[in-house]
Length: 631
Image (cartoon, rainbow, N blue to C red; front, side, top):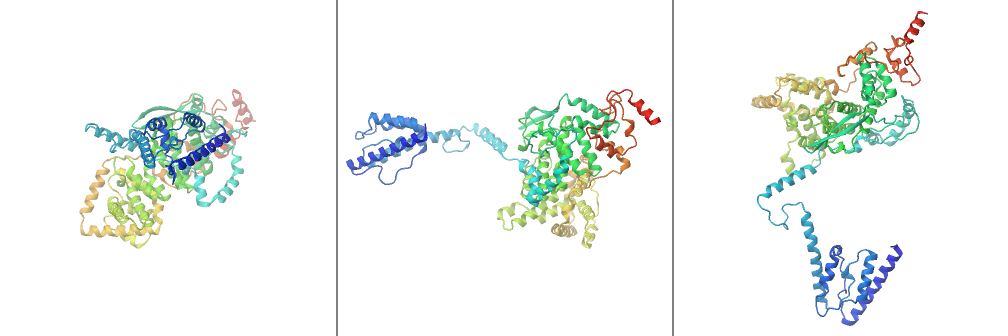
């Protein structure tokens, strides 16, 4: 139906209603439509036919419109959509009776709609429901509690906008500065095309990283499969394709003989081989090429995200990728390295979102994200979120028992008190202030203070006098696990304590602790019992977490040790297999012409697609090299 015809029909209807209105005024002197026009009830459309049937046989003095008028109304109703019957009928009755009829129609229309709402309502204690039997009340309340718990937002939900570090850089420095920086690096990044064509192709949009235009097309060498749904979590696992098996065997052979040249040449034919990308990222980091290292890690994340299952939604914190599956390990290592790269760039909010993603993918926390999430939250000024996380996150021990959370929650409360100086009395009564939280942290973990004074460093005479006290003198706690966690916390978060306000809070709280211990030593014994019960294990439960992984310093290797790079302790043990080839280009051992050369020069030279170290399948290649050497 066209718009013109609809307007014409509505205009005719309006003229007809006005004509009936004038006739009723002439006959009776008063009309039920006089005064303000009653509002149209939109729910009258739900029971249109019922209202018509109920209103027809109302009173004897009621006059109904003729058959012709009814046919016209039905025709206009089918053409115009939905028009209320209460405004189409013209009845000759008294004002009192018309008001009574209107109220009865409204009540009859509302009643079935209210019944419909009651049937769809999730409120168990609704007054319109009939009282349920006593046996079903606990079951219903339990189901409602579980439903509310599942619908409640998790503290580990990731904001996809904050995952992009470019957004944070624009917020810090401004869009003009970021654009000028991107233009200056555009020329250099375009020359980093390794093993890929310059042909135009559209890269897939991803949320973890922003792919560059010069990256090769995704080769589909990795995929993901759904395993099961357990305890409200969907479990997945990565699966390698058959085409990547040959690349993996070549990588293991090159790794066994520490051949970086062979690993670099794998990327010419398999640009998204994960193990090769991670190895080259570590190598670039050791030689000081941080941008190339970050680019290799970004390529790994791009490949891992392109392989996601259609139902895999990790941002909602309801998907699990257990690290016990060997194929899932590269995602955790690359995410952890990417998080550290974001931290070095100053993008702490983006690093916080990546850390939340790490924690949500495996509840066992294999990478130790729980021991740096507080640092990123403080640097990103997400103080309210940190308190929410400490209350929402599930753990065997309360989070405030860990050294990093005991001190970070005190700092968090300190800044929240500054942001909200006027708070309600209820909030002040339920939550401890920053001074009390800092005293608890010092009583629970006193050995942190001496290590912070040495690491920050704090050179005032007041600190020297404080750490001479017998309570703060010891650096060992007697628990290997706790000592390891304290070392991780001091190495990661010492830079926060360079702020004068936090140093003042720490100094005042330490002096109050010393004053309290001079009057009574029972508090120290009580806190020692709490510490011993919380970390009762004699073995180091967190020995798999290296302190160096939480450090901001980048280790470097001297040039003479580059050949032993593959023996790095964080790498997996090499699988010796003498039958495997080391270089996919030669079909034999490493060529003689790369021996005793600069490893970095050979690496960059091997990345050029037109460079070839020997002919493929040339059996007399070695003999010719020997003849040339002899000549």
